Length: 319
Image (cartoon, rainbow, N blue to C red):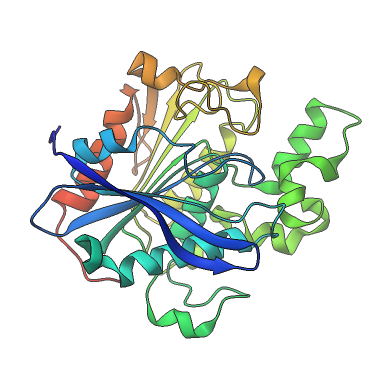
């Protein structure tokens, strides 16, 4: 750990939308040199949560030497997909364009998210080469949205499968009430093109290059089954991408959250605060070559990932 002191800059407006301004909070290590920045994306099923739903970002900044920016994105009650990915892309551009203001290195940007936020992080990582998403102002495309590292915990990847699995577990439920349907404005199976565009695994084969990706998922997660991270990991391996998957033995959903901060109120299926309390989880790690080995996973594993790819690796030009 670096033990680097940090400072805060809160309530920074990074974009304005019809529903209001979007804000971010920055945690900045005290450094005389430009530092990488990692954008944190909260969970909450795309319909709840805010930028305060986050692990201890000051501790992560102290440990890594990276700045951390916890951002808002429009929730599904305010705007349907792809609004959420457009908001994340706006945040990446804002931090890149304003890097000098905070002493950030615009060539070293990472993404870190949980659940719905992990879905957006993975999707942005897989589509950083796309200059303008549908509904995005082409004039914004002059600034790259490519990122250099992505860590995604328990991401929903295949939205059609999310709803199908939920219906199997709860027969008779209204599929339109599920978070994935609320995100897309309709049941994913009935909005298949939009659901595919929201699937990170569907984009990786078209990407000319992909950032290193770290995936983490609990084997006891019934809110979002670990098959979703396995699907994404397999798709990444098929392209030769640098990707690792940690499957945490017996962990449920939400384990990155601080205790008492549940995503979407799913108390019975949540492990909020568990990883922080236990420090380490027993896990199986699948690497970029498809090898599997027993290991352990903790916040220090995430720190090491970002240090390796944003601090210790050779600085590359912005893609």
